Length: 145
Image 1 (spheres, rainbow, N blue to C red):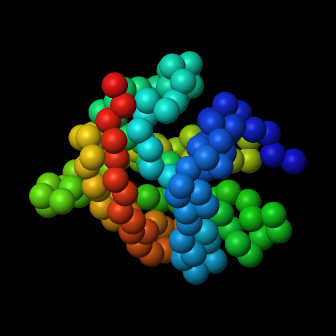
Image 2 (image 1 turned 45 degrees about the vertical axis):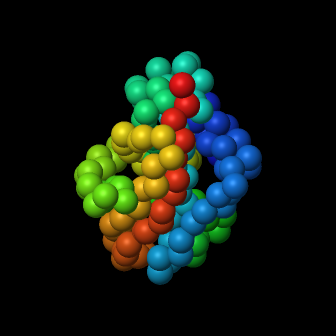
Image 3 (image 1 turned 60 degrees about the vertical axis):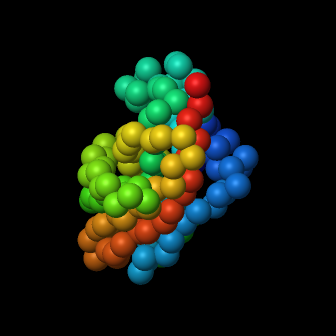
């Protein structure tokens, strides 16, 4: 049975209240679940414990990769890289860091946002023989002050 920590509970809560709940993409034998949100949604305690910059102008991308062929779809490790681009074509590279909590594995990346900014994400995912491919999505962000 999985152990759930603070970030697991928080991210599960965000998935349940988000209009973008259950966002994922199937890539061969894996599901890449993703969520992007304003880091101000995190409590100060959670942001501190995971060394996440918490403010209204910072977005957070969370990706978890699940093995669809294994019983219970366990989280698996993957190599992630990618970029985020605004409507003006300005591109920023994303730096992912892995967070493990019990059986859960998350990949987190912080990025700058502006109010009412629409960003396009282009992520390369490599889970070895289980699957590799592109994860692409667009999302609008709002600054929380």
